[in-house]
Amino acid sequence: MSHSRIEPRRVAVVGAGLAGLACARALAAAGAVATLFDKGRAAGGRLATRRGEGGQYDHGAQYLTARGPGFAAALAAAGAAPWGGAGRWVGTPGMSALPRALAAGLDLRAARHVGSLAGGPGAWRLRHWDAALVRPGRPLPGIAPEEDGPFDAVALALPPAQAAPLVAAHAPGLPPRLAAVRIAPCWTVMLGFAARLPLPDSLRPGTGPIGWAARDSSKPGRDAGRECWVVQAGPDWSRAWLEAAPAAVIPPLLQALADLAGGPLPALDHAAAHRWRYSLVEAPLGQPCLWDPASRLGLAGDWCLGGRAEAAFDSGEALAAALLG
Ligand SMILES: Cc1cc2nc3c(=O)[nH]c(=O)nc-3n(C[C@H](O)[C@H](O)[C@H](O)COP(=O)(O)OP(=O)(O)OC[C@H]3O[C@@H](n4cnc5c(N)ncnc54)[C@H](O)[C@@H]3O)c2cc1C
Picture 1 (spheres, rainbow, N blue to C red):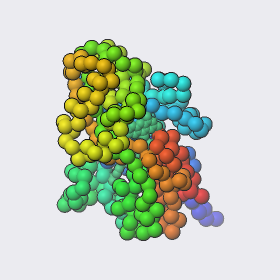
Picture 2 (picture 1 turned 90 degrees about the vertical axis):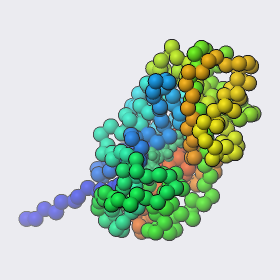
Picture 3 (picture 1 turned 30 degrees about the vertical axis):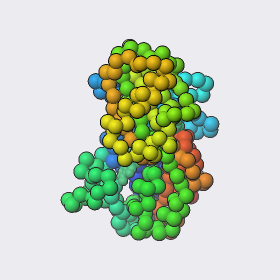
Picture 4 (picture 1 turned 60 degrees about the vertical axis):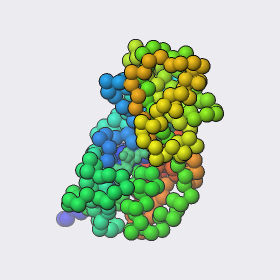
């Protein structure tokens, strides 16, 4: 008697932000073999924490909210702690602890920039380079990439501008679907002060360059002996200053913070700036994910549903369900 063995499906998930993590977890829970690729040094994407001598800063998402039970359960399992008001959650000791916990047990290839797909449906191959060698907006490095595969399907959990070039040659119907999606940039500065600022732990001014500012050191599990602030410019200001040098955006945002504090600020012991080209979704796709059954390529991310971390999580789960269905 012969026994036929059904092989588990192998799926590549590109992008280990919240959408990619949710997708890979749902695939694994359904018995598929998911391999995650991310150009970052660890999972997380825009759920990010920067640590150094100048202190610790969540320079991406500030706090997360959960409307649905799935994301609430994932946050609880990842050890999220309350901060800043009812229903607001943060990672401890930093926001990046949440994606690290969600990535536990998953097969993650970190610091790999996926530059192209080869093969086809049922037998996709991913070509990826050492992310340290890839410069944004420049041609891929001249050295041979590493290749992984074959994969039955590929889930791209990336912002649209990064996903479109990867799928254009293989699923030409997908990129036009992304045309109306709009994501705002965000200049973020991380500031350490020698003394406490006369401001509440978080503020959303409503006018002026600053969209949001928060005393990051007031979050649970941080070094409360330091005075660490994260200041995010609003979308209009960030667009106007998009191509400025990082050092150039610090003085005007510092001055805007001083204006909010109503006077000169204490001595500064740390200042750094980070530009997010893609931060909060302004015009979403309006459906949970895009899945092309003919090519077995799918797209997910917060941009499908809206500018919240939970939208990324829901989108990733939706793509896993579409892919398995
Ligand atoms: C400044 C800022 C503040 C925010 N504040 C909040 C907030 O307070 N509350 C909230 O709910 N949400 C907030 N958000 C939004 C939230 O962070 C996002 O909605 C969510 O993290 C998006 O997850 P994602 O998986 O869709 O995308 P991402 O987190 O962007 O993940 C995409 C991943 O793809 C990787 N990648 C890209 N291209 C490649 C490639 N070619 N090869 C390999 N890997 C690649 C990237 O490294 C990244 O890890 C904020 C975002 C920013 C930037």
